[in-house]
Image 1 (cartoon, rainbow, N blue to C red):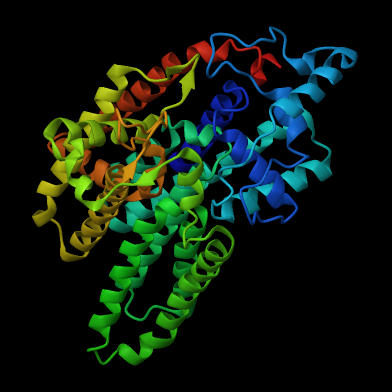
Image 2: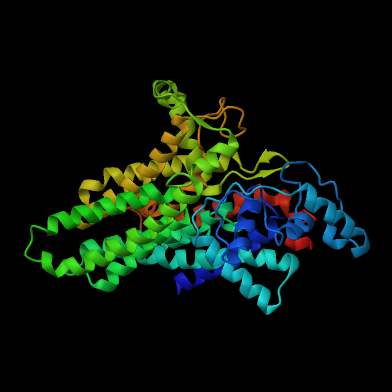
Length: 476
C-alpha cells in the first residue's frame, strides 16, 4: 500500500512540476527535435538542422524567460489571434532555425518518446498539450523507478522495512528537474537500475537461467543506448560479471552457467557494438563525443597540462564534488539568467550525501558477505561516475565556452550521473538507517518524513517564480 501511495505521489510530483516549467528548458529544444526525428525513424547521420516538423512548435511555444528577465512577447504567441501570430511564427521559424548538436546521442529514449509522440498525434492531441504529454511520459519512468527502488532495497536489505520505504520515497520526491523536461537523463536511472538489480540476481542465483541472462544483458545494453555517460556504470557491471564468470570457470557448476552467460553477454554487447559502429561510420568516433565537443570549441589539452588542473587541489576537488552532488539532487536550471537553487538546500544535500555514504562505508565490515559485494558494486558505480566527469574536466581546454570554461573547468552537472541513482540511494538509505539505528521505526520514519518535506518545500520555494510564468501549462 505504501509503495502504491508513493507511486501516486511520484506521478503528481512529476506532472505538476513538469507543468510549471514553460518550453523550452535550454537544451530541451535539441532533445525535442530528436524525438520528432525518431518518431519517423530518421536516425541522424550528422549534426543537421532541426526538422521542419519541430520548428513550428519551437517558434510558437518557446520563451526567453530562462535567460532574460522577460520575454519580448508579453502575451504568448499561441494566445494571440491567428492573423497576428502567423507572420511572427514564420519569421521566428527562420530566425530560430538551429543545428542539433545532440544528434550523436544514443537512440533508446528518443525511440520510446518518438513512438509516444506518434501515438498522441494519432489520438488527436496537438499543440501545447502534445508537448507537455512528452514531459508527462517521464512520470511513467519515475513510477517504474519507485517500484524498482523498493524491489532493490528489499533484495539487498531483507527485513529492513525502513530502507525499503526510504529508497522509493526519495525517488518519488526527488527535486531533479531532469524529470520535468524532455531529455534522455530521465531514462538513465531506470535502465541502469534494472541492470544493477539484474547483476545482483545473477551473481546470487545458484544456476541463473537464460531469461535472467537475457533480461540483464538487455538492461545493460539499454543503459548504454540511453546515454553515453552511463558507459562507466555499464563497464563496472560487465567487470563484475566477468569476474563471476572467471570464478565459475573453476567450479563444477560451470557447464550449467555457460549457455545463460553466453546469452547475457550477447544481449549486452551486440546492441552496443551496433551503435558504436553507427557512430564510427557517421560521426567519426566510437561514442559520438567529438560531435559534442567540436561545435562547442573544446580541444584536448597536451598530456603534460592535465596535471595542472585545479581539481588536484583541495579547493578544486571540493568545487567538483560539491557541485556534482548538489546538481545530482536538483540539477542546475536557469531562470532569468540565474541558477535555480537555494544555498541552504544545496548544503543539506551535499552534507547528507557525504555523511550517510561515509557511514555506509564504515558499516561495511558489519554486513554479511552477500551485502558486502552489493555495497562494493554500489560504491564502484558512484566512483566511476565521478571519475568520468573528473577525467573529462581535466583533459579538455574549453576555450571560450561559457560552461565549462577556462575560469571554471569543471563538469558539475550531476543530472548526467543519474544512472547511478539506485545504487546511490541504497547506500544513502543504509547510512541513514545506521545513523538512527538506536531509534525505533516510528522515529526513523519521522526523520524521513521531515527530509521529504524539506525536499518538497525547498523545491517549491526554488521554483516559485516560474509558477507565475504566462508561458507554462497552468497559465495556458
